[in-house]
Length: 120
Image (cartoon, rainbow, N blue to C red; front, side, top):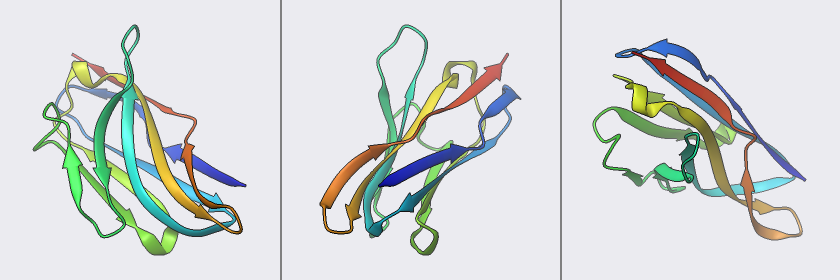
């Protein structure tokens, strides 16, 4: 089995910063593409940022220039550095990863989510 555990969420004032982490553990051979998504109350889950195993990144237009996704392949961990946070960034943030699982091949996994609240 594989688990994704997120951390780093919390309450911050507008203009502040937070750094989210998502660590994968279990019967992992390798981690492929990963990403961060978010879901605000009453809204659909939306893509925030992605990063391939080779380090190629993509971002939603709403976070470009403010958020940075990165990963540490040795630690099977992906990060989301969030700067200049705005109240509209308030949401539950989820990480996602395509994981090569021992004897099972590639499987997709979600983390449990971490709350980010930005006050005005």
